[in-house]
Length: 537
Image (cartoon, rainbow, N blue to C red; front, side):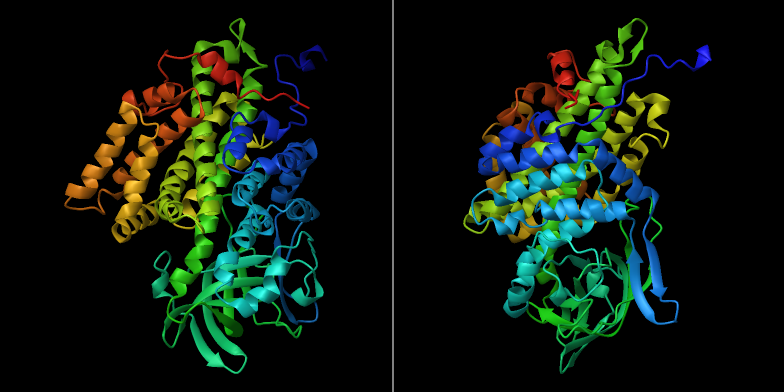
């Protein structure tokens, strides 16, 4: 029928080279010591942006993981079954070293390169990124138990993915998970009640974990109360002799987003574990792992921004209204340009934090900086993401709201990274504690910002420092302090690495507005918006 003719709709996006499409990733990777990884990132960028990857992502979230607590004969098995698309996504991530590159490559820029891979991988699907992130992040904590590390680190760095549920000593590769929170404690992990009793084969753990992501991982770091206080334990699904460890999956969480990933409640009943780090110092031990996963929260959020903006820009560059392509309508040009600035700032902040992870072991200044900028970036980038994805969805109008588009899935995903590994108040208070413990870190950040600080950035920095010095209630002001520091730092980074620092200041600091698309006409918005439009391969 003639009424079925489709006009004024964008064509399918097709394959996109996600590495080449990104306006800042390639240059920053080189500037931050990881130029040697450019070919590797480029190869993965071409793979990650294929239509096949989008189809795998859609299937992995449509056909969700299913819990099997018992086999048909009544034996307890505690297994989660995943759709084949989940395994394909995992295989591609593991085989390309998204979980391991930061440790497998013993040279400068390794963490930057690995973060670049994670950023590309996370643009299409984020649920499978949970075990990838935890495996990448566990290495520093695990090294506090040298005997365990000598056995498990080679497995964790392997690029072989084995989808079968079997003992780790029968596989060449392994994946790690983590369990901290409990029903009665939440973020207050020191209130945990899981008990760890010394035994001949290590410790026996008994208790309940309220959130344990990716329960089909090979082993987990968990917190439990030992005789000398809260401690960190390594808990495998199988013991080294191949016998099954008690790991009872009570249920899978029914989540808003991240539905391809199995998040679960776990029951321990005299479950064998081995202590990692010092007894009674469980939080400082596991926080090394948490720091890495917080970097990946930043990374995943920046990736959601970029991919959502890519789809929005593709749509508005092909759809017309009132005689013009949408992207050429001044109001839409402003929206896309504004989202581009936000996304660039998030990506630059992500990579700068990753560089601090690289340099921290040999540079005390970078180590101190990492301790305070990780919470700043985690707070700021993850919270900005939902607004970016929502605005990108609106650019597609009704087309962005239907489930045939990936935007609804990304929108449901967008709040997670702000919640996971410390929600806003926890992160803001972590920053205050870090500054109190290490005042020189704030001086280092001040120097970092002032390298390329505009008057607007300097004002934001001054406001934050004044609140830190004079506020009668730092906790009440915690979020304001973080936001001032985030704006000052992101402004400085944009001035240093792009040509858009002045416009970024105008839209975020000098003339701040509640919504995107409110940039003043002080720059070439059309050329900035054009950076967002992908070129299919």
